[in-house]
Each structure stands twice: as C-alpha cells, then as structure tokens.
Amino acid sequence: MSNYKFKTTNIRGKQYVEVNERIKYLRQEDSLKDYSILTEFTVLDSEMCVCKCTIATPQGKVIATGHAHEERGSSNINKTSYVENCETSAVGRALAMLGIGIDTSIASANEVETAIAKQEEKPAPKKSAAKPKESGNDEKEESNIMDKAVKYLKNSSDRSKAYELVISKYGSELSEGQKNGLKKFVR
Image (cartoon, rainbow, N blue to C red; front, top):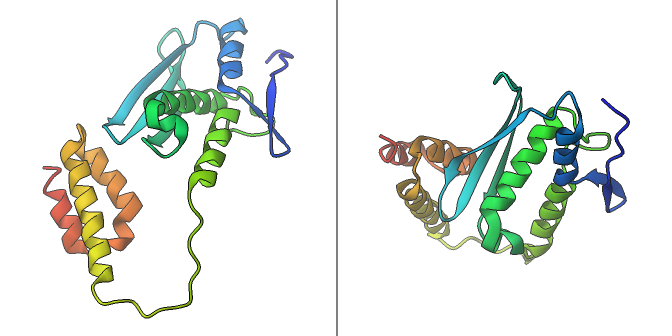
C-alpha cells in the first residue's frame, strides 16, 4: 500500500481512523479504486438492524466483509439514524478487514465514539443492600424477555436470523421449553 497518511481522531488518548478516510483511500489507491462496496441488511426492523458489507474486486471476488449491529434509541444518533449508522460501521469494518486504516485499531473513530456514547447514556446500575428477591420477580423477568422476543420475531422479515439473535442474547436466561416455543415463530 502507498504512503497515504490517514487523518485520525483522538479518542481518549488513542488515534482512530474515520470511515470516510478508509473509503477515500479505497477510491484513490490505483490498485483498489475499482473495487465494489456492497451493503445488505440481513436484519432490519423498526427496533434494530444488522448490516453486512462486502468488498469485492471488479471480477466479483469477495476480498473482505464486515458486519455491524445497531439498535434504535441506543444512542442519540440512533434515535433517528440507526440504519445509516449501522451501514457506515459495517463499511468501516469491511475496509478494516481489507487492511485499510488499521495501524492502531480495526474499530473506526465512528464506532468508538458510538460505543462511548452508548456507555455514557446508560444509567449506572443502582447499588443497594442485598434484599431477598420477591417471589415472582424471576418469572416476570422471563415473561418480559419472552414478550419482547415474540414481538421481535413477529415483526422480523427474516425470522430465522431474528431467532438466532434472540438466542445469542437471551438464550442462557430461557428454558428449553421457551426456546422451543420461540422456534414455532420461525417455521
């Protein structure tokens, strides 16, 4: 690769390359400028999305991929632009997997800023003296997870992938019967 100097953003003492810098490099580098950047939303609904970005040669050979996941409302920017934010992150990760702008990190400045914003927006967990659990709280929590999972599955265009996401996130909190019940929405 050339001696291209990437502009970086300092975030908490570490330098990160922004996604637009990675794209500019791809489009300016003679050996790469004809490569394609293809994005596809593998999950997209009113509450969250998953985007896959593929970088391909002019002949269609896939040379790098990247994925991103965003939830609407998980940060201020995501309240209005979770789809766009997700696509930008996926493109940045795919270009990083190609080796563009990774001297200090695969994560882009955009991703790190979003992650920090999410952490700062989440209220700190309340510390309280240990109290015995009230009976029924666990059942209410499991019921709440099931309600959310069912609603999410019903609203998903690709229920198989939606099921996989639910299980990866909440599988340890669900019984086998609950998992089997959710599978019925996939069929």
